[in-house]
Image (cartoon, helix red, strand yellow):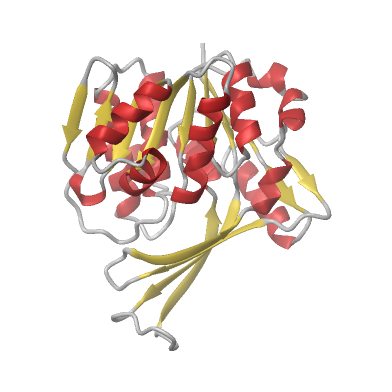
Length: 298
């Protein structure tokens, strides 16, 4: 039977600026600007669709031009959006980032207020179809209440992406307040992990997350690779070599690779290797999703 995956969270238009030379503050910097499609949940769904997975995206599109473009692009990429909603009086999500001349992000601004429309009530209306999924993925662009609802109501393994240091706190709060605090998988980068656990090392952060009820922890370490942890095992995998073109979307691809590996029946910790391969594919591409990811993972 074909694996079905639901992805819940943000879909944005991405505006990505890359500098030609070193950044000069408070000045106009020469470079080039790319317009694309992003959002953590949408990126994850796009990666999984490219890998041949049956995937549906549950998000909110704004009623503006960007909302129509995002909706239509998802359909073109074989991402099922029939459980998503387009709301006329909302502004679509926009993500603006500035990358230095080495491809690493200097700063970013995310306008994702529209996904606040994904409430427990909104999810309850779709619960029957959500729970036909084999795996469920969510990002912390949605609210703490929505994250807690997912932990308390979905029946398939739930994977969460922390998104940012500000938003990652939502999943920790949701775990703290859940009736039965349990989460199959949480993926954070190092900065997010230290911030939400108030610890000073990735090992301490992972232990704190396990104590909260997370079964599988992946802490991505940038050029140092990834730290993967369960109650029984811990592994540190080095990053795969390659020249970085763009860091946007690499973390999203990592989680997509992890879920894809789980769907193939691959056991922890080898799932982390698939995550690293997917992340590397994105790092080598100027786009937030590498259209050739299937040639790397399959």
